[in-house]
Every structure is written in C-alpha cells, then in structure tokens.
Amino acid sequence: MDYKIVKLNSTDIGKETESRLSFWGNPLLLESFAKRDELNFYYLVVSNNEKMVAIMPVFERRKFGIKYIVQPYEYYYTPIDFLLLENQSFYKTQNHQLEIYKILASYLKKEFYKINIHFDMSIQDIRAFKWSKFDIEPLYTYVKSIQDYDSDTLPRETKRNLNNKAKKELQIKNIWDLEIYKSLSENMLNRINRSHRQIQPNFIRFLDDLHKKGFCEMYVALKDELSIACNILLKDKEKFLMYAFPYAVNEIGKEYRANSFCFDHIFSCHKEYNQFDFSGANIENIAYFKSQFNCELVSYYRVSKKIFNIK
Image (tube, rainbow, N blue to C red; front, side, top):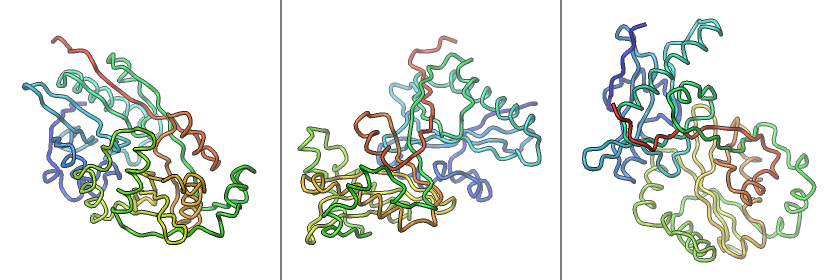
C-alpha cells in the first residue's frame, strides 16, 4: 500500500475524525498540556489513497532548530487511533496495525533528534519500534473495574483501615477548590522534600482549565470541616474511564489514611464508570498502597530515542 504521513493541526483534522479520537488524543486535552509546558502539538496522520488510516498526537519542542518529541508530565499515555479497521479479519487487522507502526517508527526516527513517548496500554505490539532500534522499556500501572466494587472483597488489612474509627469522623466531598489543593500540596511537598512544581501558578491554571473543560474533578476528605486530603481525577465521560491525577495529604490525613477513604468513596459512588486507572505502579511504596484495592497490573511501554540518527 502507498502510505504517507502528514502533519495536521487540531483545526485541520475535521469534526468526524475528532469524534473518533480516544481520550488521550482529544485536542482540548492536548491543548491544555501544550499551553502549560509551552509545547507545539499536532497530529501525525497516516493516510492511504487520501483516506486517513491512523492518527497519533505528538508534543514537539524545538531547540536551535532541532526537533524533539516529549511526553509531558501527567500526560500518561500517547495513543495511536486507527480509523479504517472495520470489517477486517483478526489476521488482517493485526498485520495492518503492524504496518502502520512500522511507518510511524521509520518516520519518527528520521524526523526527530530525540524522542520520549509513553504509548497507551492498548499498544502492546511494540515490535516495529524494536526493529527500528528504539530503546524500549516496559512500565506498569494498576487498573480496577469498579462497576461491581464492594469493599467487603478487599484484603483484610484494607478493610480494617476502612472500618476503623476514622470512618465515623471523616467526610468525603466532591468540590472544586484549588486553594485546598494548594494548601495540602505545600504541606505534603515540604514534608517529603519534593519539588513544588505542582503548585506553581501555571500548573494551577492548567488544572482549572481542565476542570472548566469538563475533564477534572476533585474529592476532598474532611475531619471536623478541616481538609486533610484531596484527590484530583481525570474523567473520560465518553468511555466511562477515570484516571488518578495529582493528590495531596497532610499529616492528619496520613494518620487517618484519608486517601484510602477517598478511593473507597469514589469507587462506591461512581459505579457507572467501567474502570479506574491508578496512573502508574512504578514507585515501590506507592505501588504497594494502590495494590491493596485488588487491582490488575497492566504494562505499557516507553519508547525513546536518545542518539542522533545520521542520515
């Protein structure tokens, strides 16, 4: 087949194509990340006989005329959405996808000096990028089906934490108040001696922008009307998926295990959603906390190019 790749801005892909993009390919979502990090974003469109076959978003940074592809913080997955795979056999679909991956891998290697991409977990066939000599690293996340969530099925230790005296003393509220997030985050980041990037003004504006676009919600744990923990979530309201986003907890919240209560509340109150993604399971102590909710460990891949390709 005679494939070609073109670059298109979000305004040029057309409403029909836009409606078929996955959550992480949504131009409104990409726009927020690009604005926050001062990046250029666009789509690589694979076409055949003038028909769009597949589409992949990229974030580009240029320095001294050299082009880089970057994976912004909190932008967890880069998708490749296929647009013309209907009514094909499994055999043809699988090999068609592999051909597209090969075309994209070749293009990326030629066009960009440095690349860092975390592919969506639906992209498990990574052979084309391996064949093109990209560096491949498996990463992991926990996902949980929450339609039939029942806290009684959780491990004994988790149930004990959820049923201790704190259960009678804590409230969980769904409110949007970034002053609460900032205050709790500053307390937490000072305590663990971490960067304050997530409470800088442009990050706060970024969160507010996502909320106004309908992507973000916040759940706050309170004790005696005092905020002690908060969890911000990303919501895909088309496919009914939720993703963990920035969180914060102060010393009282940590003592009361308030984050566990937040997740229990979220899972119990949103059974209309199909799945919750904890957005990572790659940091040992944090992964252990997430695993207590009887999650499924799922892999995804980081694909990178670190050495200049001499043509």
